[in-house]
Image (cartoon, rainbow, N blue to C red; front, side):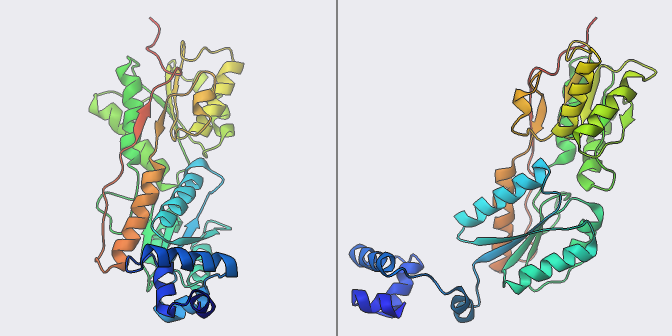
Amino acid sequence: MADVAAHVGVSHQTVSRVLNDSPLVRPDTREKVLAAIAELGYRRNTAARVLATNRSGRIGFVGAGLALHGPAMIGAALSEAAHRAGYDVSSVTLDDVSAAALTRAVERLLDQAVEAVVVAAAHSELLAAAQGLRLDVPLVVVQGVTPGQPLAAGIDQDAGARLATGHLLDLGHARVAHVAGPEDWVEARQRRAGWLAAHAERGLTPGPEVAGDWSPAAGHAAAAVLLEADEPVTAVFCANDDTALGLLGALHAAGVDVPGEVSVVGFDDAPGAGYLWPPLTTVAQRFSELGRLAVDLAVRALDGEPDPTAPLLVPALVVRASTAPPRG
């Protein structure tokens, strides 16, 4: 920084102001300083900055299940939102689903002097472990959250499942079957609760339920169970789009017309959902907004606000060709 200042003929403080986007620098001086930075190849000394300001400008992110669409999108959205807010992001992927793995991941991030930690892990054990951590920096969770929970940004999974199931019931299907997500994932349980609630609101009995694990294989296997149910199944709500993909494939192989004989709804609105055959009706989650909310909560906590909260984001139903009224 001293070399840049000497090259331009300004003070060290002026260079610092340019680097921090201070409005106190004249435009022509700013241009000269930026040109000198480019010419000399100057890069900030992050370690020195941390020592001088006690701020790293870095947020830590811990993710589980990043091979799945939802967690992967959350990580990308958080990174984009953090960069817009002036922060870099250090990410750690959990090597196993355990409290010990989460603790190790958070410790790695704290060693990098992160100012806040965001955890995206909707697994029950991981959420409990995250809420039990006592850190000197804010910790924000972004999955499996409940309304009014402090330092938590989330999408209303129950509401999304009600939208999906209600859509099928309102088309005239007497009951809706459900291919569920893993029981030990909070969001799977929240989506199941919404499926049940949509029936209860209408005084209806839900259709059969089949256990799943978020995978296409689970949806494919569920088709055989549903097709052999005591009462014909005309509508299915799948816990995510991957499960719906497997179900659609198995129904097609069995010669079952979708949506003529069975309507199918997924959850997530993954990039390929609109290109399946038939294009999949699903529930879209607002991942970009979720990333922004998580960063906003972290910044508010860093600014001294005690236990900041944010309302749950409401997902949206995306109606495509995989749903229709029942025949007859």
